[in-house]
Image 1 (cartoon, rainbow over the protein chains, first blue to last red):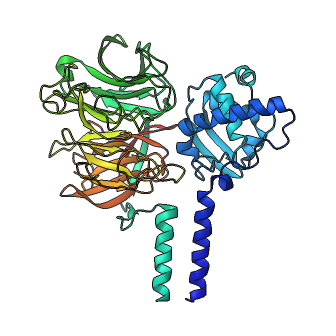
Image 2 (cartoon, each protein chain N blue to C red):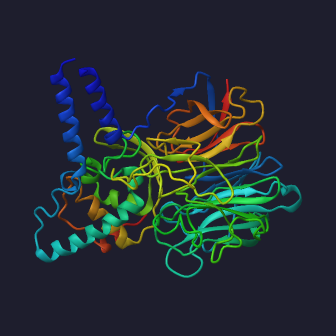
Image 3 (cartoon, rainbow over the protein chains, first blue to last red):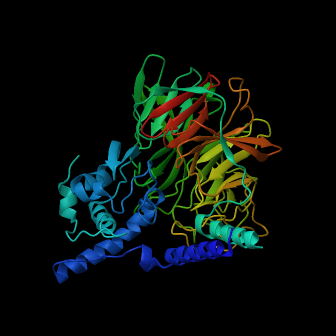
Length: 152
Length: 372
């Protein structure tokens, strides 16, 4: 084993550490891209801030701080095709829980997420946080009315 | 020299990035073969699981439903818990018939309740009796306060020892800075009360001003597994760490288990909670897991159905979806075996009265392990 290899590994570990310790690099890039109106932008921003608190209380244990989940067990929220394609189903799953097989980014998940007992406002907020974190962007804000309209 | 440097760098990387416990006992797949039989499936999150002396099985769903499963029937038991608080990890939690059920008919329930001042809920312990498929004579034994809208860490596991003391757990309710280290506050504690709810005279903090006198030990995070050792009669618990640092502890009167002053875990984000893993006056865990397995459910194996497992400890893993057998020698873990791999999120582990191990698996139901 050469010294060069050791140096490369050291550099890699160092970079990995730095990358992980700077929140701006791995947590919330890309918020508010293409947000149309300033007023909407403000309410979306407030909703996302509130949603982060909800996420850290109710979701983080399984879906993890980086939204990547655990492959095959807890589906990812970051860059999730399911989340992008199934807006209504996503809100529905937070409101009423989700059980049975789903496929996310080509991987099957068959587990149970119980309903969290959140208020409609909390659901809107946490959806806005999830849909605008870890590289996700969604300029169409989830409103309380939208959540309220989704029934079991 | 080069190799040493490389090893040093790699070790450093593992410690800081991946949080892997050094020199841990490796978990190995069990060589024995077992069949798994689902005996009841009409339940989402089977948290409470218990048997009555006639052999019928009580299954509690976190959503509040209780089913009495007899040889021939599945009977819904109406609870009348009007204050049930189903939010986040809260809901209907543990169920425990009194060891002397035959004579007194009491069944103990732990659930999240919104009773009392303030928004939100906190853990409550009641006892009640079943008559005509409903709970009657519901008596409140303990209600933690204050209520909180936080969705986490209700604890809830219960055991009754041979002296008739009821031990139960309440997690820190997501308020680690205020609750676990303060004996005047609920949360982050193991409690001990008499089976009628009164406080034993020799509880450790009965003479401390302002203390919650039901407290038996403190400095806990969230304990979702509890059982009595079949030989020593000590009360064992495990608790969820944050990221890493799930613990097994033997409950000692008045002891401080350290959360969040000492822990082997870090925040979910990877940032540090405390630099300390030990401190004088605070207990060290009997065993800890890093990375976390997210332990739920705990049972010592008794009886003769599983000769290799007898006297050892079973713990469910929510995260890795297997049952872990921790083989014990002189109260220390010296072997770890993986059983029921990929069974699903394991919430509850119990020894049935027939000597078989029963698992409560989320989304699946109650699963019996039958040795081949």
